[in-house]
Length: 329
Length: 120
Length: 106
Image 1 (tube, rainbow over the protein chains, first blue to last red):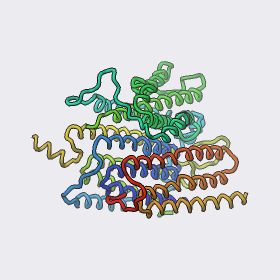
Image 2: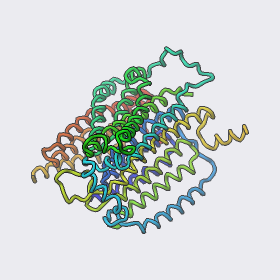
Image 3: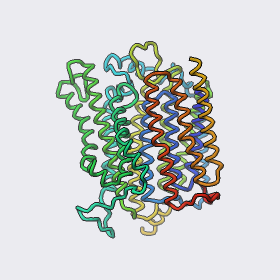
Image 4: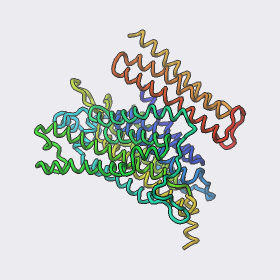
């Protein structure tokens, strides 16, 4: 029965993707992208990937939709159709699709325990996680400890995206626009005549942040972790900014805090690694952080997940604020 | 359950090609970015499809429950990283599109190229 | 217990029927506001019935408490979203009460 439901969801995915490509209205395309992300997240959950489903729902359906809408407000709203015929891309795409579908007949059966991907390292990780690290969630153990280098690299990637967007859009526009003086703030664009969303938003905002913190710190016991927690808290603050206006949001979480958060999380991660070196082990070896190696691993994972959450929250909020503050040309 | 697994892989192939078609055939830059996002999501679907084991559950080891079959945790770790990297590139791409709009006044690729040819 | 099973299945079916009716209305009704009215069915009564059915399936455990919390959160935010949509449409000039089909899609 679950199989039928999964196949139904996959068909919905294809229909949504075709609708996204064919529609001429960009706003409709962005909304359908949010639906696409949510359907993909449901599919991930059916395939037993709980962590990935949570991340896709928080980041894909949440933050990506907000960023795309913010960019749409600054660019165009409709797509202009091209006059030239588009049969060459269609032919190339159709041939490649047929070749790939032909290749899928050689793949191992879905769920086969003897498939090559389930041999080698995966049983070792599943066996050794309770022994070496002692936390229930194997995905967090691999992400934080066994493959900690990759997570550090990924953190630097999202930090780079943040400073890249700051370079591109952070400087106010030049000729023709007189930027306001240093002390004056831009006019408040709060939704002042939307009373009900403001009341409800103020009511649920602390619960959103609380839930984000819960997801962040329960990453070791269930699905969760730094990325999801950081994205949820960022989404909560985005909601607050949309409802109350930019000035209120900046007086609550000022600009320097956001940049400090984006950089500080990555520094925290690197500091844990260097602390491991100072105490006698290799870089990012958490076992030497305390007398008991298992406790050292747990402490290390807790601190680096906190670093990851802080950086993800700071980076996503910086990108959102920069896009939000850009004046329409 | 051959059809079940094969249907996942066919969906991956079709979604990949739909996203790729949007990247190469559409002229609007934001549409291209959304097509790239669909492309990425299709790749995520492929990896997560490979991690399922018959009768398995999510890889969360609970105390006192032995003999439980778990699904493979490694593709999930890879895709967790990939999702965050995907949104980083999308955000950077959107920033570039906003700057293109401010510099050229349009975000249709053929019009941008025409303006470049006229100037050069 | 079988009794709880039967109740939960009745609630599932009724909730599913309401969601289906809401979806059908969102497709077939003529005006934007009437379609919004139909789509909000899934937000309110569909969610309540289906969540209550899942609670009966979960029994009296931590999962049931979490489900009650989720239901409370959804009850608070979904009607607000529907209100925000209707308010935005009204403020942007769409007039209620005229049964017409929009020209360029919905």
